[in-house]
Length: 119
Image 1 (tube, one colour):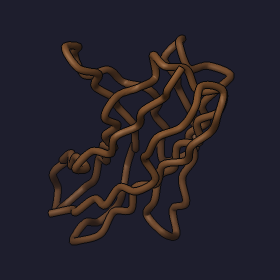
Image 2 (cartoon, helix red, strand yellow):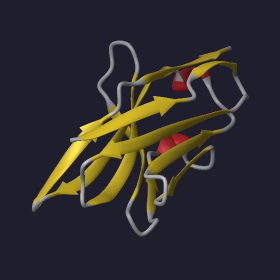
Image 3 (cartoon, rainbow, N blue to C red):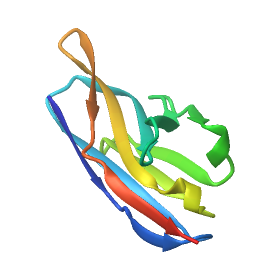
Image 4 (spheres, rainbow, N blue to C red):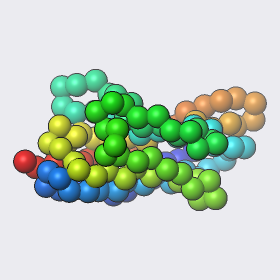
C-alpha cells in the first residue's frame, strides 16, 4: 500500500496564499498521476488539479491562473500552491496518487487538510 501524508492547510484571508504538500511512501513500483481534490460542506468532492508522471497539468476552471500543481518525483511528493485565495476555495483538500504495485494500477487518498479562506 501507499501512505500519503498531507500538510500545509490552514486559515488565510482572502487574497492570501497557502501551499499544500502530499508525500507518498510505501510499497510501489512507480507513481503515476497525482492530483488534488477538494470538498466543501454540502458539496461533492471535485477535482482541483492533476499532474501526470511527465508533468502535464490540468486545472478546474475556477482555479486556473491562481493555483499551481507540481511534483517532485525524487521525493514522491505533489504540491499545490494556491494564490489569490477566495472564500469559495474553503474546503477540505485531499491528494490522490495513482501508483503501480505488482501489475495493478491503484489509487491512494490522503487524509485531507482543511483550507479556510476568510472574507
